Image (tube, rainbow, N blue to C red; front, top):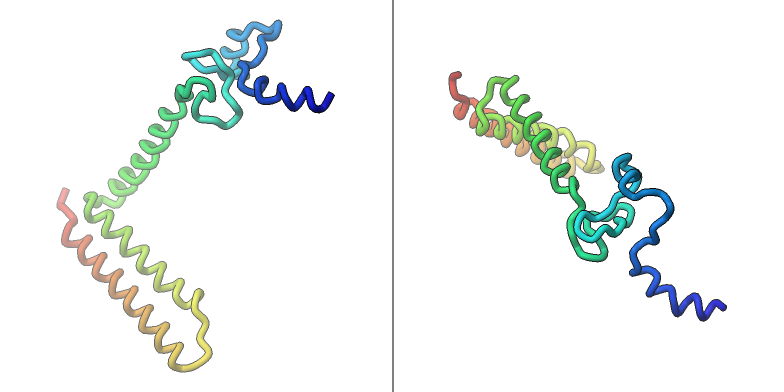
Length: 145
């Protein structure tokens, strides 16, 4: 019996799901059943494409584009809130990143000797100089609105 089940397992996997007594259109309207628009095959849970015909799941690409627009809109509104142009805002973000890196150097590296402590302080100075350069570039790139 187990041998017969193993022989038919691969054929059954690629077969479209069996139609039940419940109307598939009623289920798709409620959102519980997600089927391919091209061939009508039910999508595998979590898949972005149909396993039968390769058609993309509707809404997946649109949702990704929507999330990207929302993210860019948030950054744009933050730049507008700070009254910065795009290049000045990018320089501001680089400067903030350099300040955070200067603070993280002391957390990441432990010092046991004086020479190690001096090396960590030199790295902090370099990160802070990078932050100053980014902030100065941001000030020079800022446009009067």
